[in-house]
Image (cartoon, rainbow, N blue to C red; front, side, top):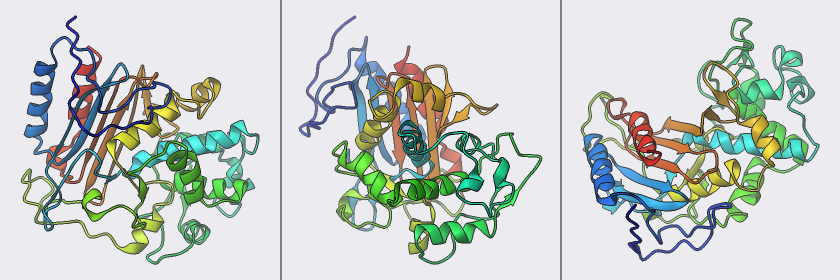
Length: 359
């Protein structure tokens, strides 16, 4: 094997990724032919008209990273390594880990019934937290989560509960329904006495010294560092004209409680997911219990869990994100885009690149 150690960036991320003790953007990973790998990935991204940032990690070291396109076409700001993107449903893995932490602390059990916290939810006396984490609760929420106005977290959940339906046919069968994690976020607030935002800040942003992560309704990041989401009128069009920025109303940024309301950079996202899957946030026993294929979809604890591949994705508001991590967190592909189109779905591309990393 030919060892190539290349200092290729001037920005040094001094905090280690979980337990891997690696400085991001400092060295390239050992690879048989890094030039060939780079060419292949560049070709994949070009075929997708990619606008965003990608981070590829092998053996705990940065193998490849690149940013393309505009974070804001109107202001001429381009995407870069520290650009933050809305991660949408990828946030669910972080909410699940917060739940599991409370299980470790003895404040929750995965066998707890939903009725213990929200008895007015239909059939809540038969739904466990485990089923909610695995999307097997039978709960269905017509339309989007949250009301069409800014409310407190518990008021948002109260509003959603009025619309929740229970399906006997879907109970104990996998059905992707974000309301599960909306309610789990509310449960976290009830058992800790702290807001979900505070828990997220203490557990991730402060703990891991994240510099490019914030809630969608926050305004701490510079405009040049926080991307705008784009799409096309025709979602099947692969054009990348940046002619249609996605307009997000203020209440939407609050409504996605625990399910998709956070902006993150690729490095911050890798730090968090590595910390959850392979770091010391959870015990090995907790990870074994939480991140298991719990249904025909392999979904459990916010990830789709396959052999040595924990996968998550998010899509909405003009953004698409895809995450693949090995069980030890040392191999990873993090793709965050601010130009979502059905014709250029990034999931197959991210999977292909992750397979290349593991060859």
